[in-house]
Amino acid sequence: EQLYREFKDKAAFFVVYIREAHPIDGRIAPENQRQGIEIESAKSEEDRKEVAKTCGKELKLSMPFLLDDMKDTAGLAYDGWPDRLFVIDLEGRIAYRGAPGPKGFKVDEADAALRKLLDAAKEPEEEPEEE
Image (cartoon, rainbow, N blue to C red):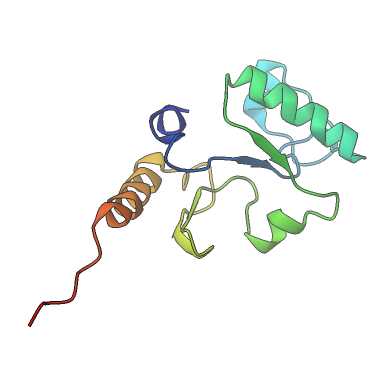
């Protein structure tokens, strides 16, 4: 969220909500049980949308959310489960691919990759030498 607030005018940020990592009808997380978090696997896009809204609200995230489809196309293409950070350059190439979360969720690494891209974009192109 802090990175988003700092750079939202210079880069596009999105949370891509993929399938639930720890649904009560699947791989239950003990921490979720202790906190009383009970989320079922989405059965429809509307279910996924509601869970994403709740996630954004509970985590106090102001950045925009995108929803993966029910075939989990984005999650599978980016190997995003359970969570992962990416920085994509202007040509659509992956400039930073974090390891799977939660242990691989290293915002400082994504921050460094983003700053590197933004710094490179600021550098003026070399002008041809005059003869």
